[in-house]
Length: 326
Image 1: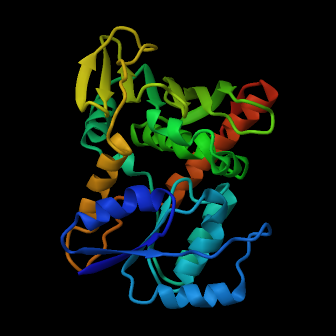
Image 2 (image 1 turned 90 degrees about the vertical axis):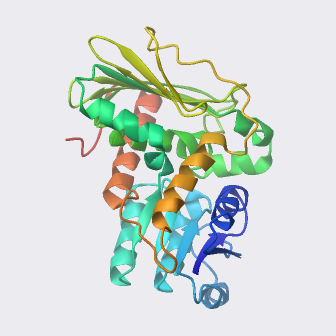
């Protein structure tokens, strides 16, 4: 048997636990994680109790909000447990690097859960993109699943502290773009929609120029009336869409108009399917954990650099170079 610790509440309870419990040789062990203070620390007594709760785990899938990743992740790694951290691994590149240092210090693996890499259609899109001369890529995510939680206080609380649509959806799209061979070099323009200046965007649209000369459009809409998760790739002869919701491939001459969405009744829809593929790989053998194909520190830092450039472009209205772009 393989015992996997998971965060007791939030995305872990709704997504991670059902997937893990469906694997015959895996036991999911929900763990109550301690409260993180405003200064980013955890009470010493709570940390000691957590260390005891983590005993005997083979892996921990951390699903707490981004502003808790550094504190919770540090305690998990300190306890000697390899960790798959929910995206985007901390609030910025510095926090992701701190987690990596902790992992090295305690000789434990630290990876990031960008599970769309494991979706079969995303892998087909990667093969197609790498074998073609790509002129433009469009990745669109309109998540109808967000509507039910959009007006809850916790949504805006998490948004103000680095959560919300940017870390929940945009970070996934950026990593998927990287996985498809796109290296955003310059943020040309960023548009957003939000209810007030005090809240994070509930929709963000990013236009970027890539280092290979292609263009990139990312659209993350957390309050959509329909569910779309699609990848469009334009070459000199065609535009091909990979539809992760319906599981199909289609030709479409208009790169700006992806396949029509629909109300997806499945909990987390394509996200759950991709996480299932991820766990089938990571936990393929009883008693063993293989994080080899999961996103690593470099992947996490690259996503943070792109998000930082997007925030700067949105704030100042000027094109911004992406730090570290090759």
